[in-house]
Image (cartoon, rainbow, N blue to C red):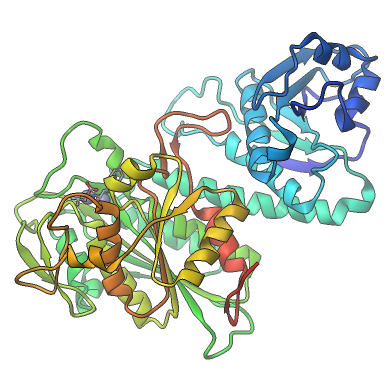
Length: 504
Ligand code: BES
Ligand code: MN
Ligand code: ZN
């Protein structure tokens, strides 16, 4: 979808649909919508007075051929209370409007941000909302009914003086949203169409196109490195594993400067292994590579936005399958770091592949680490699909990530990682066991396991098991992969100055 800045007066635009939004306080009609009302001879004021235009969040009022307005349709979206309205709400309003019109086969629209929403941040959020909403999870449908993408959107209400700023905000929003959609496409892929080898190929193609350095390690390379934990998970599958390593190096690159490692879990299908999962909902376990997809999407953005910090993405990719060669409960594995792990439950495989991913990122010289993983069912119980669970070893570093989440409009919440959780994964025969000895705290004990492999390197862990997949569509986004984390992590990297992560 093409998104362009439009300077012509919005009431005179020959477009299939003009979109704006109204607040609960907008009776009588105010601001930019009052200008429309004037052209429409007071029709909108009367509508508000009738009580049918309430401004309630995401209320849709679609009017056709309003006398005095050139656009064929006028869509007024409820924007809720003015004081609660920020860029996250603007992103949703823009997205919900696009999806409302797309369902009515409208192929082009003009979006009019309100009088206070003309900043670069607002233009970027509007652009993101439109592009994220335009993505459908319908790749394998032969007939794409009601979901033909909108072809063009004009951002209207701007004047020439603002062109450079507006166009660069549109560009930034486009880069972010297209990368988020890139992640969503990968996550939506079924496991027969995205094996670890195919994921590595897609990663390599992306990196080459973006101009990023990429190395793909095959099974032999992984074995030569002694990644015993990753190999243990992979050994049950007929599909060989891959380790994807993508590096962004800033120019000029300074020796001794911090290096950020982004480690993403990429289990292209998680059956549970010998500790096999029940059949119900198992098909969803194709999204168990969402952490890896997130990191690939972040790298795709960094190649274009060019931050001043070096970033290395490390993505261990494998299936988790039962089979004659599969690891068995009770097996002891030696991880890359040298630590021995007693594998009590083969379904706790994400922490095994991340253990080696984190250790490898440290070997490569990363001074700071962030991982993203669909790691635990327990985080789904704790936070549902609302918040990403955030764990960390360094409070200031963790707080920086949470600030980026707020800036990017992605909900994330800090979770505890006390020493007591480490106590719960003590093994009697090895250094550590891969699941807890007691009930409860499953997301924290999983994080405690990962912490053992991040050592003294400042590290943040994002458990995205609840948020990476939408069982149902929302007004502003299709069902399926959500692409959560991409925007937060990009904000985090862009504000990570060469002296280390900074405050805002
Ligand atoms: N991939 C799952 C976690 C998951 C659950 C992701 C639900 C998305 C939705 C992970 O590998 C897993 O199986 N975790 C187990 C760990 C348990 C055996 C300690 C879990 O959370 O049940
Ligand atoms: Mn599992
Ligand atoms: Zn898993």
